[in-house]
Length: 558
Image 1 (cartoon, rainbow, N blue to C red):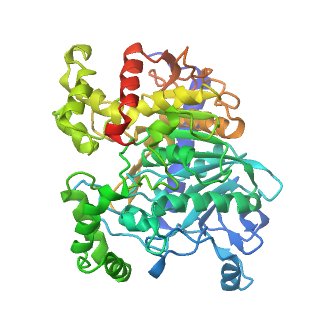
Image 2 (spheres, rainbow, N blue to C red):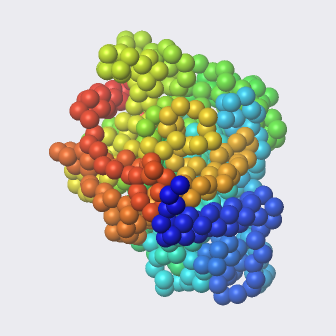
Image 3 (cartoon, helix red, strand yellow):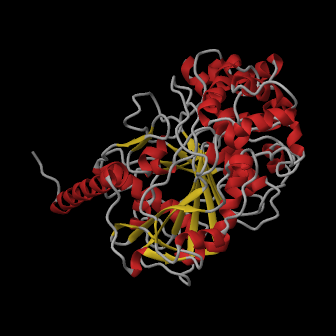
């Protein structure tokens, strides 16, 4: 048997030692107890209104967990826009003492993941951020900032399951902020009466994200961050949120770059289309009688134990629009985001956008039925027109592949083409196809959210905010480091190439004339010192299909 060269053996041993060390740290941090922090300048930050002590999770990394960015949305504040943080109140509560920020906070109330589980775990007092920074970073460091918005369909998700300690440990020259925002009915209840803010506010959960960005702009310098160099990033509903921030009418200069992963192209209902949802929800929660004002008063006084099963019930039984998600409110969102992007009505910043190879959010075999379920405004005739764009003959005799692509492109993947095509006309854009399966998924192909497993230390999310972490092999760790380097290079320089790993290929820009994209995958020979990623060009067929998807914005309402 031929042994590998001594340097490869050394690389393998060091990788395995690193993997074991990271695994122990994650186990302690996430499931046993917070890593002990000692009072030192390296893990204490002074915001001017309070001092916070974070975890020294690596010798060069501090995690400040559960830092509030807004007032608690309790009582009468339920279903309303967040209020800016009352720093005088926070300072008074601290009483001059250092505030402990070494444990993950309670997450926002969860909805069902629609996999047979019931939601309801969490708390309404959840408007916090987790901040990951280099040890000792202080005001004046002016480090670029990544703000991460988690996915979960807008109805579940817990930032604890996507930790960034390892990112800072690898690249201690950025600050990363992970945002908690209200979910499901608590964040996205909507009825026409919310046009009068006396009744409530549209898109409260999205406004939480806006408030978090405003807090970052005002306070991230204390953690060593540069408020003028903020990149927003999200996957799935987080990617959808990023897209919505591109088109939102906030009147704020809150970010300067965008990374959108697997953009969830869910339909944005009008408030009028959400009335049946509201009535069913209110009735199930015991608030179904009287005027809308009376119903809202009842819902604001109802317990979480009454509201959680009511929102799950609506999700599982309502025809048409049945998910509590953002709406076109005429204020923050004045049109469907695809139309705004196609018409150039979006924030002009560098963009990195992509999807996984085989993703779809639909199941079954009936393509038309799946499309009509995902897009409630789609008619039978429009569904037939979509199907005509995906003839069986183009999928190598595979009905399963036909179903996956014909549902996956409208639901997720075509955002890559739509956003990059518009952005590249006036700024820099890069696209990718993520092509490495989650090794624990047990399914065929590279499904939705596969990259999360790789980028977050083998993370898989579960029910009610839970999650697990699986040990990674040396080649998986090597690939994860490559991904993180590309992402943080974009954060640092607005370009994934500037600070990429030396083994990683150069990533050319996407242009309308040359639709280059990176295929991101680990080395197929399982060699840790070389990259498996390579370049390809977006196919003519994909371009034609996604151009059609883009043209049918009214039927999709996205």
